[in-house]
Image: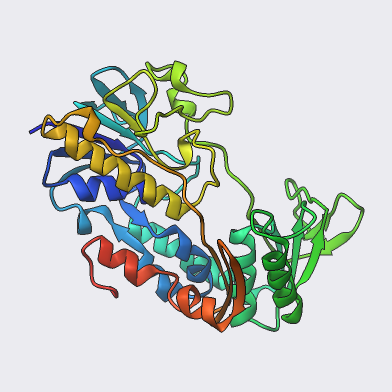
Length: 352
């Protein structure tokens, strides 16, 4: 069988490995032994039992895949090298390393982190959230839903929350947070580095007291490991992999780039990474059987629907031609955060 190496066990890489595991000799390289349903992390922080459903050992759904729990450090035209000294040959390579982040290696350690974070939130009287994008807004919503007595402050550098959606959706999210007594400071930033006494200073001189703080802003692209490899010339000025319409890395017909690491001009979001994975799977299946390139699928940007959960029962949704808030988007997303659906896609039961 042809050999496919997938680097990165986030949403995009995991879908590719799972979809191809009976079509090729597949290897997944990931720094951790598990897949995490990332859109459920905010809830897991206030409900540790929820973490049991979103932290899934790779071996539970990749039954026919070799899993290498290490970090990729080099790639040549024929193989990938890992930090633990392995050299893994490939016929086709998929790069899905997304954004740079740090996770414990085992599922048990990750679940322990969620338990510890829950206890910290539970014991805190005041909480600061830096960043008013979807991660920050959803985390604030989860905290005030389970702990309405907490003093929650959000600081966002932009003029409005959720700047990637229209102003109407943004305002609905702001109104909801204010109704739950969240203090929202817009047009300000705050540096949390070196603060140990719980007193944070904003760029406009305001002082915020907080027992716990969470930074919910963007992370660096996970491509630094590629800068001295055969793919170095395929990195754009922002460190993203340049890909063609089939999501192949430019200049390398047997290498695909998918997810947040690519230079596709679109908003980087997890469900878009899923779309990338689906196109890459289609194209790899064509190539694995010797099909013609003319049969390969082209990735196309699509009209995006955006759903942001607000607590457990409400949300805000922007569809191409309408914006709604309240219980309907809450019913669509907020009750379960698509976790059951994602587990089913991986061939698992909705619950553990």
